[in-house]
Length: 137
Ligand SMILES: [Zn+2]
Image (cartoon, rainbow, N blue to C red; front, top):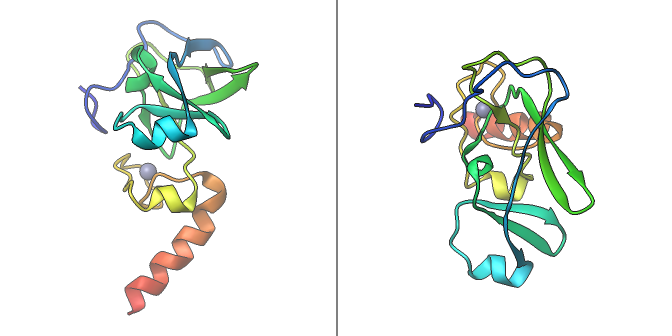
């Protein structure tokens, strides 16, 4: 069981740095279809295409200190190893939401760098500033 969320996905063996681990596969939805969908596992591939995850990849949790990263290649979403991963470690990557999306997704990764929400690392300074302002009020 994951400490972060639901079941999580764990390495079944040692994984090398930059190794390709799994493809995020499922039905392809247009933006309009994605708006009508209530799937928890929509992954945005590009401006107008979402993948409604169906395989194990959809259970990989977000963490602000990831050990995996996303590589999008010719219309396919891959999860690759950011570093060497030991057998039994939970696989995690940064979901990289933008500020607008992040508001609905508080982060439960529990790492000490966590800004409190699931958001791309490039927004961390902005988010921290906003949270400070809120605390002062
Ligand atoms: Zn976090």
